[in-house]
Length: 382
Image 1 (cartoon, helix red, strand yellow):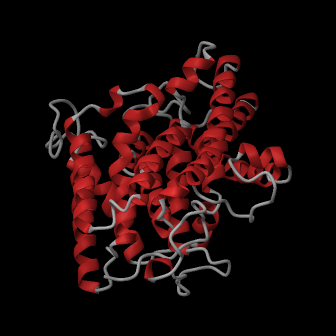
Image 2 (cartoon, one colour):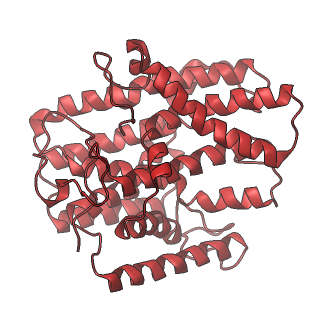
């Protein structure tokens, strides 16, 4: 197995293990001049495009640009559902594994930084998007003014902030106690998390997104495990074999979406394979980034976008909503035009928003960053 993708310089807390050893080298072949890992940032960029285009199109025919359920764009959103949030989650685990928490005495400091990074934006952006959807007609979402309910049960897409906070809280604590250092212990926890997802309806635990944390935990742990146990293959034959397995899983997913073996790999009795509760969905969410990073695939353009992934996540809903209002005022009704313009605006205006917010202390606070100093141009990840 080869050394895992190298760190990008993101930090996770004061009491981290030393950034030494093969898990922490900067890969000069793939890293940029500032020490960032281009394949990992590229994968972040891919995740950002999945996220933005999903919210442009909308989850149903009454949301977003209101595409029909039998359209190509709807088929696309159904397909990337297997990758969108699992990819963000796995990358969070991968980045954490570069500099994990190694001392229980640093747990408080570690979680305080995660609270700043995740909870501060949560309490800012959840009310902001809720008020926007309550007041404006152009959002396609009618919402009652219930700020306490918004914070307790969350609003899309900001539920992910709470979800990752809980995952960090549990994994970092176990790590700091030395309980995840062995392959056996780690495998037991990973398999247990998969079993919970497969055999329970985790989304029923809606308060503070505890259920979603259980749903996405396998992907976070997979990211940690890839780095910690050097699971990225170096032999070409192994890479080719993994790629073949990935392609087979992709074909199976597409067959499922088209009504074939609808329950294959799922422990339910209705509808197509549920990407959240099936062996097939979990396998795709883990194999795609594993194969992608094993081949060191990269794109400078996507990596540049990926460098702003945190800010794009926080701001894209507002960028898309405001741009849609402008298109509506201009009388634009073509769905292909709306899709292209809103997708570009969702990424571009979010990046512009990050650049502007970082110029002032309160803006950096809103983004979950340190108020006292400016961060590098590219975004840190949670």
